[in-house]
Amino acid sequence: MDLIDKARSYVSEVLRDEPSTHDMSHIDRVESVCINIHEHEGGNIEVLRLAALLHDVGIVKEHNEGGDHAEYSADIAREFLSRAGADTGLVEHVISCIRTHRFSRGLKAGSIEAQILQDADRIDALGAVGIFRSLVSMGALRALKQTIGTVKETSMNAYASDPIDGFSDYMENKPFKIRDRLNTDAARKIADERIELMHVYLNALEVETFRDINVLP
Image 1 (cartoon, rainbow, N blue to C red):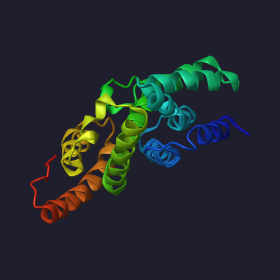
Image 2 (cartoon, one colour):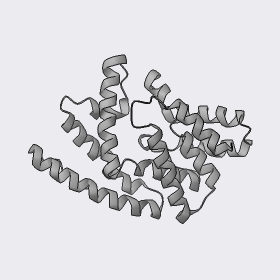
Image 3 (cartoon, one colour):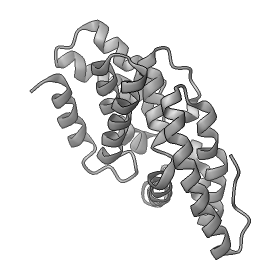
Image 4 (cartoon, rainbow, N blue to C red):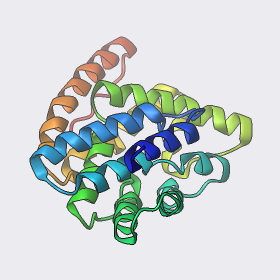
């Protein structure tokens, strides 16, 4: 089993019961988009795939303890890759990508691989899957608050008394700001198609709920 297969198996086990949208299906999509963007933008494909596979492995710890899953994921990735026998240069490159991937931290990516990981992770918040993920995530965060008291400070809109108001606030403050924060031309092309679909959905939601929620990019 090569290093990428070992990482996939390891992350699948860690995220097996992940209740939010940082689950294995998200990991698989991010990896696929990374590969797609890499075909146009270049970079080290091994670094990129490992970073994509491991970038959210610390999310379970964040749910349980609060804090920042990007930092947790980087630490866990370092331990896993070192145990697996990866060379130091590869390990450091992968964890540098993981540390800067998170949208809410606004950190600058230091390599083409880190830029592509940022882009792929952000693209998964757009389009039909982006809408699906936002609604599932809101439900999961509300449930975590009720069951174990965990509150995610960067996602306070999830706790709005009216979930549609919370969803509207989320759309205004994240998805429609993503396109201007992407690093690569390939990612921006993907984003344009997905954002167009999101507007179709929001227009319909506005009509059906008698609200003015159609946020413009």
